[in-house]
Amino acid sequence: MSESLRTRLMRWGFNLWPCYRGTGARVTFIAGDWREVQVRIPLSWRTRNYVGTIFGGSLYAAVDPFFMIMLMKNLGPGYVVWDKAASIRFRKPGRGLLKASFRLEEAELTDIRRLLLEQPKVDRIYMVQLVDAAGVVHAEIEKVIHVSLRKSS
Image 1 (tube, rainbow, N blue to C red):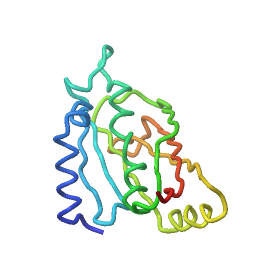
Image 2 (cartoon, helix red, strand yellow):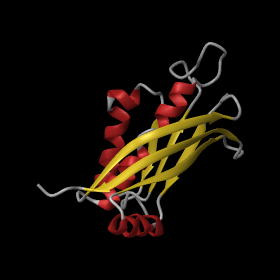
Image 3 (tube, rainbow, N blue to C red):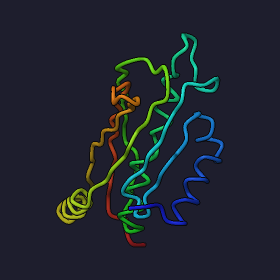
């Protein structure tokens, strides 16, 4: 699916938002249905660490918010969605442009909705990899996302 005007504006907003802009990363694509997001992070003066590779904090910050936001956009306002935990595993030093692609399948959303009919909360684990142009994995990030039904007031 292509970007919609709304997701294009969100992409621009992310890239201008000081918290995200400071990571040195850029959002390059948000699908109109929020089922796919793509980001890139280059090695630059803003992302370079003491030893000349991409700073680990920038790698993590580049991918941090997306699974939570994708779930919020797809599940809707009747659900509470929070980041619960995260870990990053560094595989190779980032010495150039790295990219990450986030995808959310309809089956995953259906499964979450089904599970929340049976239990009050669900924790889901998502993985994303930062890869170079050759497809070599430089970092793997695991996110644990908490989802529950919003209580009526």
